[in-house]
Image (cartoon, rainbow, N blue to C red):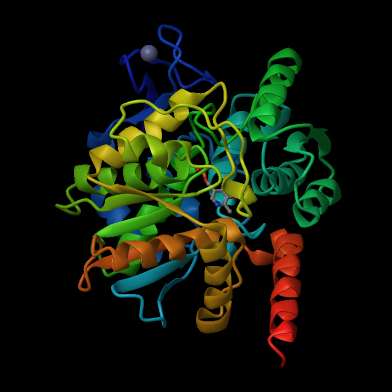
Length: 399
Ligand SMILES: *Cc1c(COP(=O)(O)O)cnc(C)c1O
Ligand SMILES: [Zn+2]
C-alpha cells in the first residue's frame, strides 16, 4: 500500500511502479521502495499478532487496489522447534504448508496481483517446477492465461500440477538458465507479465519478505541469530533479509539476523564466490545435483547471484555447500524425526545447519531458523530412487 516506486539496487535510478525488468541505466535488478513514514506502525504490530495470511501485511506489499489481489491463503505457516539435537536451538519454518506445497506461493501471489493491477491478462514464468506449479494455480484462480518454461528433466509431480491448472507447458532442453532465456524472450514478444522468481520481476521478493514478519511474531517478537535458506538465484534469502530490515526501520527490533545461503555441491555458483571472497558471481558450467529446485547455474544473469552474495556479506552471513548424500540423509531425518516430508532442495537447509554446528560457526546457544521450502511429494522420483537404493544396500548387508 505504501509502495512509492522502483529503485536500482546498484546505481540508485528510480522509476514508477511499473513492470520494469531491469535498470534502464545499468541493467541491474530493481527493488520496491516504500514510504516507511506513512506506515501505521501500531496497525502493523497488530497484524503481527492477528495475521491470517500474507496479505494481512498489505501495508508493506506493493498492491494499491485490494480488488487486484489474487490470494489462496498463502503464508501463515507453522514454525516448529526441532526435535533433533543438532547442536543449536533450531526452528523449522514449514513452507510446505502453502497452497501449492512450496513457498513459491508467496512471491507469486504478489507477482500475479501486481500484473493484474497493471492490466496484464497473461503471466509467464521460467521455473524448475515449483514456481510454475504455483503460478499456474494462481492464474487458474484469477482466470488469467499462464505460460511456463521448465527444463525437460522437471519432476512429474510439478509438471502435473502445471498441466492440470491449465497452463501452457513449454519444456526446454538444457538447464534452468535455458528455460529462463526462452521465457524472457517469449514474454517480451507476447507481452506476458514475466513473474519468474529470479530478481527479474521486482515485485516477487516482496512476497518472500513476509516470512521474516512471521518468524519475528512466532518467536515472540525476537530476531533469531541465523536464518538458513536454500538458494536458486537467491530472492528468497534477500527477501527475508529485507523483511527483517523493515522491522528494524519501523523500530520494532534492534538487531538483524545473519543470513546463511545454501547450495548443493553440484551447483554452487554463489557459495563458491563467497568462499573465494569475491565481489561478483560467475555462472556455473554443469549442474549435477539431486536438489533440482535449486540447480540454477545463473548463466546470463550472473548479477542476480551477485545481489544475493552482497546480501550475505551485508548480513555478516555465511555460504555453505552440501553434498547430495547429506541432503538425502536430511530428507530422511526430517521425515523420520520431525514429521516433515521435504523435497531435497529444502532438506539442504538441515544439512547446512549440521555442517555449521560441527564447524562451530553456529554456537550451541544460537537461535537458528531453517526454511523448509517445499514438499517431498513434488520430487517423488528422486526420493523413490533413493529409497530403492537404500533397500538394496540393506539387502546386501544380509538383512
Ligand atoms: C525456488 C526454490 C528455492 C530457491 O529460492 P530462490 O528464491 O529461487 O533462490 C529453494 N527451494 C525450493 C524447493 C524452491 O522451489
Ligand atoms: Zn542501475
